[in-house]
Image (tube, rainbow over all chains, first blue to last red; front, side, top):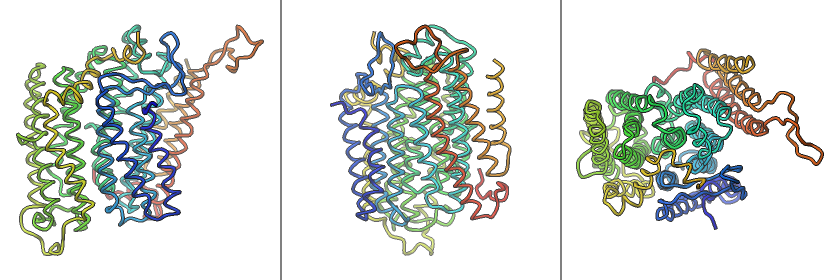
Length: 499
Length: 112
């Protein structure tokens, strides 16, 4: 039996079943959702040992004839496995956390339904083998996340979600426009087939136009700097587990993964010479401006949201370098950032849960009252700012090293400066929330419930252990296949269609 | 070629509406115009002069068919557009209930 379609089918089916079952048995959605995410995480882990091969599943048995694909292809290669691993493991911890956290909101069943839809969409984006299915899954994720951002139905949430919908919708329209031109140009939507057509025709004005549309569309989705306006509103307004999902995985799947898949594997990074420069400059701008804007925030979750912009800048910058080391650094930083940022958002959720406040001026001294939240948040902050034994240090070191190696020492220096600013704003976060003097209003604050502490502790342990990914045997299993897929570039076509 | 350019202009009109208008409902309308422009473009891409519906039967041979794939894509895109528009409009209604106004300048609480 082939398990590839299960990544989409199981969460979609669960999204359908949850409201029905929740209607009959109250509270059953907790178990169902966690069972589904745990199963998907296990399924992804079982895919790791075969990450090096490219597995293709043709929906409905429509095999390609003479190397030309007719049906819908689902592709799982090294890069997809890595993304599936990140998506499904963060989703598991987020659902575990939601059990207690979402009890304060009404209608948990609807929340889990939307969550499952979002998960199905993200898994679909990662395994889609053609442009239009990628678009459909992207829209499923986007619509579910618009609704989830506004789940509190306060005026702030509604406004943030409206802003998110306007910019997200514009992005989707631009991507669809790009797909139309792309189809006109290549007469195919399958990634592998299209990359062969593009390799044969070379650079045309239409290809440049499509590239610009995709760059702006997916740039908006990943909140790169000139297109970032929605993120600092949308991510803090969402409930904490959703903030963790949005910042941790959604922007990476909808923005970074799609950009990498299309520009490296379909169009080919070397085909358009300006492409690397564009990615490098978008990355550097987001990295620096995001870091400085984060420094000026007073709202704890807004600070984390700006930090996401900055860290995604690092990832795009690393991919823009285009060397093997740069890609390795980018992927490793992507994994690190997913774990760390979702942990930090879960921490901020625990603080909000206990104190009802996320204003850093009012908070302070919570370390003694909330030791688990404080300690895990400290670990995540230290790793994110790049303190030596932790994972975040190694990924930044690789990125900076790669940029010097690729002949951009000046940009490497900029990355170092942005990393120092990162240290500054995480220090500010720790100082104003967990250290210092405890405000009178929060004397009664206590540790978050056990079910919220477990995911935080697990994520903290994973974040410490992530540095081990660089050790040879583990790296060969997880990171190297993904690096090979990206570095292989348009060789992707041969891997999928054979020949 | 003129029709292609016209549908691109329609797309730009929609984009103008989304980016410039201050009324939530007008922004939603801008979205719909943008979606229809793209759908139109898709159908135009599949069009062949003198083509018929792409249905193979025994006695049909040597005829020109229009490309059926963009039509299938447009159907999907219309459904997705329905979902996004419905969500957008329902949010506009909820915001109206909170502020008694559709004007985006009166609602702005968040600072970018």
